Length: 402
Image 1 (tube, rainbow, N blue to C red):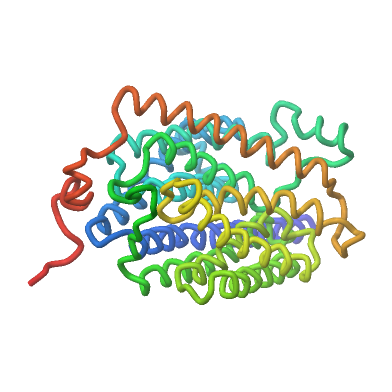
Image 2: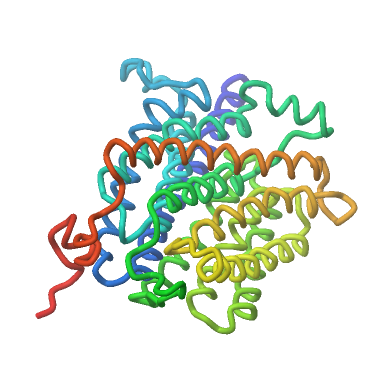
């Protein structure tokens, strides 16, 4: 009997290990989506830079999260010898891989906002510091209960702040850090003339669409496998992820008036928003959450570019920052039992927690990028920007003209 119980426990742990490994691979693949979304959106002379940034950001994120970020968030380090590590649970090691892919999304998000005019190494440095410090502080508070903040939420509002898969922790944090970086970096040269917006059309709609598809597919790993164990897998999360994506597409199609850029960002807006409450909403609530997010993205992107004159190349602040903020709040609306949800959430906890997350991310990001700007500089010269980041930084274009 003891052997049978041990075998069952081993099978359960092995299944969960494979489950979370599969999720890590899916989220890792999403970084190709970030890359191609940016490649398709930026001008031709900046396509190589977009590709290089995403893959190098991922590598440096892995390093700083291994040595600093994971320790801050979960008080776990990997400084023991290989024999000790090999005797540790394979699940715990793969769990690091899964959570690291989330952390690496932060500079990937920022990259889209500061594209076409940022220096390579200073931007890489700033993004890495955000992954090492800003992100894990917020991650640890929400997902590990650090420093008693969640206890305060529960005592004050009757429920802790709920963010199942990172509307605020990942996307909101990335989007609000990106806004700080964008404001400090300034607009691309020639973007506004005599106070009017000058169109810089996407260089490659098929690549943009490919990026959106890769991200949308990977998102089911992002959300569903956030349960982190095979026992916790939920069909409701999968259904809600699907419905939010659909709502985002349809809303962006209508509000965006058939614009392909808006249409392919619509599903991403819906998916960002549903992360927080995907485990507690009714599918109709998820559909509404995604639809509102899709419309919100289109409207705010236009306002940002035309009225506020903030040159956010991929619209990462409205897409990740604001839709992530909305997603955190939406979990406190459509997660309520009165609206068909599972309950266990508080609207006030979600409102306050979402706003605090956005504020901490913006302040932390502003400080980091301000220091980098004052010490290393973060902006390409006017001549380098005119030539394009590909030739100025990497000395090569995306393809031969012959």
